[in-house]
Image: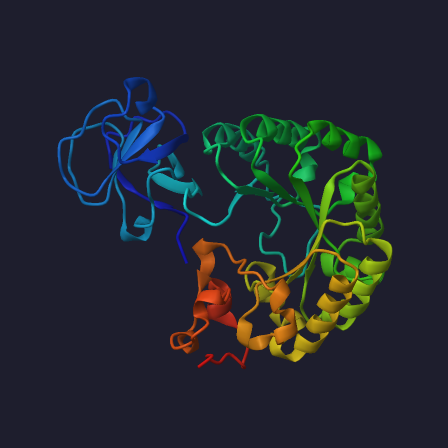
Length: 380
C-alpha cells in the first residue's frame, strides 16, 4: 500500500502556506514554469534555482529554500505527480500521473453514517478541500482519462459542486468524471437541472442502492428516509439526461437481497447507465462492524452469478469489482473488472504461483491485513 501522506525533512522552509506543485525531473524548465514545479532528484548535485521546491531521494544538504529529503515510503513519486507541501514539512500526493484511477476528496462531512464507510464522516469545516480541488483541476494533465470526486458527501456543497464540475468541463473536457454521492440531494429537480447545465458529456453520478427494501437500505446507511430520496434522485437525474451508476456493496447485510435488488433494478431502473457489484473494503467503519458485515465471497458466488445474469439479460452494463478470480463462478468473468486503485492493491502469498495473477484484481491492502476469503487458491 502506497503512503499518500507523510512527513518530509526540509531546510530553509520558505513556503508561506500549503502549496500545490507538479513534480518534474527536468532541470531546464522555462523560468516562468519553475515556481509551479518541484524538482525531483535522485542524485546529489548542484540544482538550478527558481523551483517551487526541491525533493531529494538522497540526503542532499544544499542551501536552497524549500529543499526536502524524501523517505523511502515516497519512492513511488514520479514526474507528473501533483503534491501538496506545507510549511510544517508535510507532503500529500494528490494526483499520480501513472495511476489507473485518481480520486479527489472533496469533504469528510456526510449525512449518512454507513456501516461500512471507508471514509468515516467528521463534523469539521473542511471547505478548504473544495478550493484545493479547484486549483488541482488547473494542474491535472488534459489527457487524463478518468477522474473521481468523493467524500463524505460532495453534494453538501450545493452550488459549489456545480461550480467545480463546470470548471472540470472547461479544463478537462474529455476526461470521464465520476462523482460518488448518496444521491439524496437530487430529490430536487432544480439541482439536477443545474448539473444538466454543466454539459459535461461523460459525467457519471455513482449512487449506492443497498437493497430493494427501504428498511434494509436505510439501516445500512444509518439514515431514515435515505432510500426514498436516493430513488427520487436517480429518477430526477435520468430525467435530466445525466449518467447514473448504481453501486451495491455486497456484505452480510445486503447479500440476502442481492438478487431481488438486481431484479428491482432490471424492472424499474433499467435505464441506468451502469451497475457495479462491489466486494467489501475492510477499512474505516467496516473494521468496527466486521462481525455484522463479513461474509466470505465464496459463500455468495452463486447469488453473484444470478445477479449478474439478471442484469446482463436486460442489457444493463454491469461490472463486478473488488473480487478475486478464484472465488467467483466462470459465468461472471465477462463482467469482471480489475478495479482496486493501484495505490492500495496487493496480493497474498497464495497468489505468488497463480497463473492468472495478472488477470486478477487482487485485494485491498486492508483486506490482506484483516480478513479475506478462506478459499483463495492459485490457478495452476
